[in-house]
Image 1 (cartoon, rainbow, N blue to C red):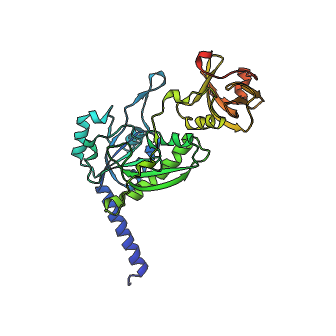
Image 2: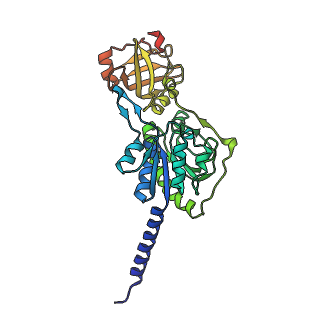
Image 3: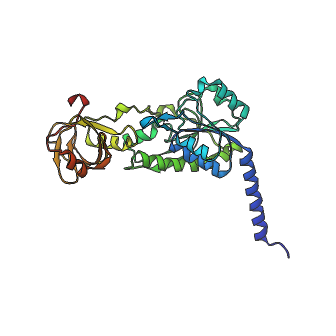
Length: 339
């Protein structure tokens, strides 16, 4: 029976897919990352069939009751039987750097690793070190672009795939994708950008490998920076405008939380809404209460609190909180020393 055009096309497509699969298996990628944001990219590389001889992530940390907590990347790597390295500081770990050099990776992919790579690592892979960065560069370079996007009230952010250089997120841009983040908290923004970043990464790698990728230099005059988040960044005495406190609640929903103190105890806030009303008391004072919420005066406007967590307790609705705490108009939230 003669072969049809459709059968020929199908066989040709299967041959091409097999050829591409073989290329991916031959390509060696060392992956570096730590949180859930990075795990989406690692999983996508695994799903696509790339060879991953080594995964590098931050050291395990101690949590409650001295329990060791593994990074999301380490957990994923172990599930897939991948080799894992956990340097305290990669630039001061010559044995690890030599290990990577001996592997001879074609590419190093980095996503929220949490450490700066030295020149001795950047120069190893023949196709360079590629970063999955959680912003539309050159805006929001640095360690916390997703937090900063929420704090700035951006309706849109995105992912940039860039070739890493020695500067802080200063390398040439290769590809971008835009995402709507309006009204989202950190975990939601992270999930959206992680998925977008993983998809963009596997679309971009082939163009890097075959030499068709276009590298665009960043305009440094447009650069902004997002520094490391500290625990104290979450504190509020409500002297800021209500919209800013509400942004802090969303930005710091995973850590360190937006928090204040009342009656000698810390309260963490997890959900609130801005009221377009003039304050009727000092910042941090409770303006009113009802059975489902309470309202706090801010430097500008008021904030209606809907969910929080009292020190030593579980997260709960504002209604449940007030039934156990007897919050009243005139009570105050503020610094710990006001206890």
